[in-house]
Image 1 (cartoon, rainbow, N blue to C red):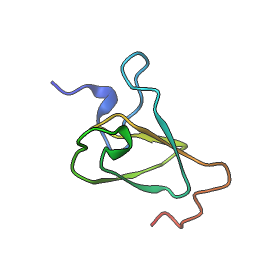
Image 2: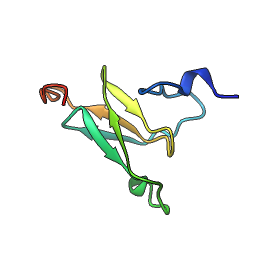
Image 3: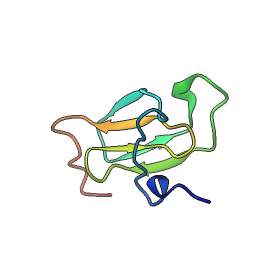
Length: 75
């Protein structure tokens, strides 16, 4: 059964489960392949930051939109 908090295109971080690893992003579309974690990684996925942050459903790295960034025209 899927966790309802982790479905959709912008999974939400879960307190006590999601690591505290946060990466600042300059664009709303960010690639993640898990290499920031230092492990073997995972297949590269593109995540879209809709509000202020997005959490990778594979490795739980949270990407946070830097203040003043994100003017990429939603592309």
